[in-house]
Length: 418
Image 1: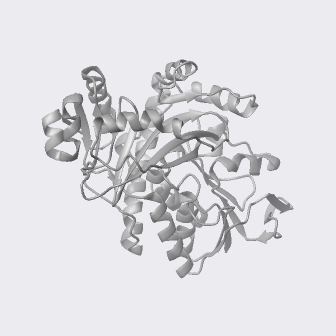
Image 2: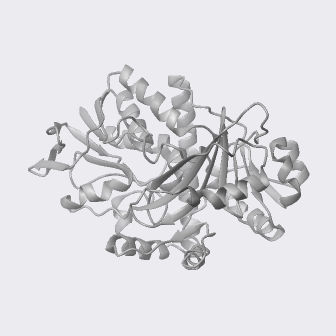
Image 3: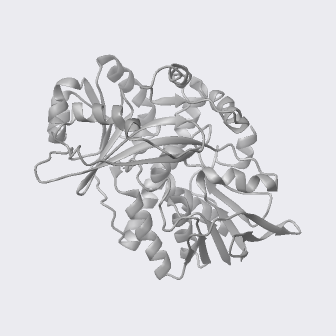
């Protein structure tokens, strides 16, 4: 079959690879000039099943409320005159209770753990390089109360099969001497030895090149304006340069997915959550952490990637605007520099902001639509790097009529209507 994959980010390129492995012809279409130039461009870099807790939690509404007058909250709500935003907010708040948070966390951990296994398989098959680093990730806490609460909360992940170790400051520094400057500020840390990290953009672009070597075609600088259908079947996608025909289609356009399928009568509860990242150069005199991790009290992620150091923070529910000013990064840089003053060259920041395609549950949609040849693999939110390879494998299994290797609870269109 000839598949047209819409989107050349992580979800689209991994989908293309799995479909190629099953013997299909693949065309990837994207508005960008190169693959991974939007949400996959400069993300946190953490492949983190050990951090798969649901964002929709009992503490989230309070953070959103306080963010209306405080700019230091991990989740910020910026109200818009947009019915789509308010509809999504109501659905998100409906997930912010203990019972739903437990269910969504369990499902996220299962998908993330499976996807990490699929990532390692892809790397083994293709030999792509992407500044990948195994050895685990650390999640540290600046207050004793938050560390104690997290240690208790981590039992949930342990029950799902993840190994989580609690470390005191001495044990943490022994594990990662790059955190020595922060030792006196850290109350304790949780260490997940199976987590890993790497540059998602390098991975996506390297895998895209492998896809092309195996016969895939990439049509870049090609925005998709809509679908063409006949007798209940999608026949082509409409673009400024003309229709692109296919036997089947995969929608992996992140935050742009809902607007594309809305005219088809398909409602996807996906809304952008803006994230900010800074990439700093690492020179011979710098002492970055050896492992990636998260300052959990500030929800500030960091990741060494070869000769550069990535910092990411903030979840801002503020619409589709991707613009930014240097001042938007001031707090996250100040907090990082206070903890890790010698990690990188703070005088040469490269700024970036992206829109994470969030669903209320934090789980993506991997499903067939009411059009039998239109498939979804979209809505991966802040865990797209961790979830990508597993989601693509599930998609390929569904297309082939094979039962997926893990349940799809919470990832179907039916679950969106619940």
